[in-house]
Length: 190
Image: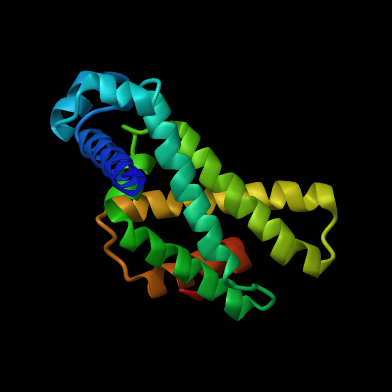
């Protein structure tokens, strides 16, 4: 009996999450209501409230799950060489393609800025732990450098998403890593 209950809970949470993501593709989180989520999910409001406090709580759970999943995904790879950093960037982009609907909704203007900050903190920590410390960069410098690099990369990725992921991940990964490694001198190559 408890296995059936666990399956039912998982199903309920899944349809609630899918419903919110679907609504975020059309309207901002501040305009979404629990009633709309429940109607789309075909779930009673009382059932919703046994799982989440409100629609912002549901959004926070979705964001946290994606960030945790991305973290597990990134931990599979080491980044000691520039070539590996390129591969990591490519893997992140591939992850985003695999989870396109959710990522698009969470990084759009309809989501909250919290997700972008969570992703930036995850990648910044990953970058500092795996890249900066290996290169002898001082702590204060590495903090500012990682913020600069990651925020620029996030905005390039957001533009890529808004352009319907018009570039293959391999090509965008090369561009991002070229921007990071070469800065403005990248323009001199052209």
